Image (cartoon, rainbow, N blue to C red):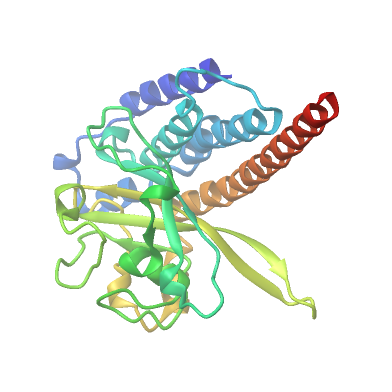
Length: 295
């Protein structure tokens, strides 16, 4: 299965090379089209790269397929690399210009504010990248230590109070005096950021839907003015109007599709881990019982 993903990535890279455009000579109108991307190409790459990778990841985890015992993180990296390639293709820029991170978001603890929910990196892109982010729950930060997470959950970060939940965080040139990140040296790694919530619906006792956020799909880059999306900092009090501006943007729709698919895969992965933990505990209990009987 891993070979199929690698082949998809190579095919995607070739397609991106074939459609490369010299933006320096484009008119303003052509630049706007470039930022919108080509819808047919976007759907093609999302399907062959991201959706296939998400499907294979979920299947591997569901059936316990071990791709490489010496490097168990490979499926996670493949997933992030494929998601990066898919979004880059919708913008018609090389994937190497972007970094993709998939993060878990812990649940709400009774009596504690939303901003204290834990966030830890589940996977990040690695191809042509010298940036190595900490992975796993031992390296967790909090929702309130990053403006993008706080905006999507509608809570305070250390500089802003997000009174509303947003469906997407986007800024093509992050203001250093307003944007908040747990890493004080964040500008070393990126200047623009695009983040989507990984969410799934549940329902209360009356049948009303509840939008649960289980993680985040983040894209960032050192380039500015690259996503072609209005800055969220100009719409902090108007989430509805901000969402309406995203409806006609290919990059926002592409990112949303990828994020919704990943949310399902991550829920599956969580379920598999839970079942494995239960099975392990049962095996230990059985071994202990058999040992006591022999004695």
